[in-house]
Image (tube, rainbow, N blue to C red; front, side, top):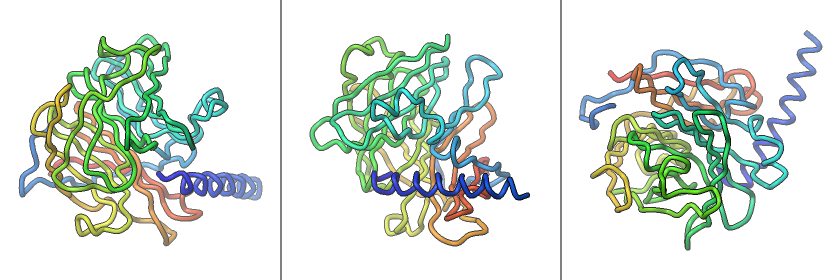
Length: 291
């Protein structure tokens, strides 16, 4: 999300929370084919303070609850150091959990990692030449050794890093380097989250407001990679699968947010925030299964 839009969103949410308080006082998937579809099977309310940016299902330890990020989940200590935006997180299949952070200015982005035992550590990546400051999402490869991340705006690439805390080449005391690049066969716009549904398949939510790239706004995208990501560049074939649900009691601009694919159940979940005051009342985490 662009910095100006984030400030505006935070201001709106703060005002809406105050209004709501006053009111309370008063009263492993295969590649896509032509027949491949994702059908909506339900939804849950998405809290705009703690579930407004992203989500992740956690396999290890067993019976772990789903994780969410939002402006209300950022630790105060990070805010005081300027890390005031958190994106869509992901959890590895061996229990590591990673949140992407960005600041309003600077020359770096940060990945906050929780080990299976509960300890937290921070890995900072110094921006490469031409790299956008935004740190919208992370997606850990099924083998756990590599992590993809995305930039905001219209992009023809995804960034690949060694997974901090998992890949032995990483250390909290050293810069986290970019390892390689995913080169997309067509541009994508405002990707808010991606998750692996298979070794070479990504499902991504796009907040594209224009609809000129795929003939629809807010599309659910699939990216099929030419090989598993690693230290060498790979190519990605982009397909728009469907438009995300845009339903609310208010009219205006919806915002597609993070995405999660739970391989245990085959369930895909995507957060969509409602316009205006309805961001508090009918924002949803939609659930889908493959048709």
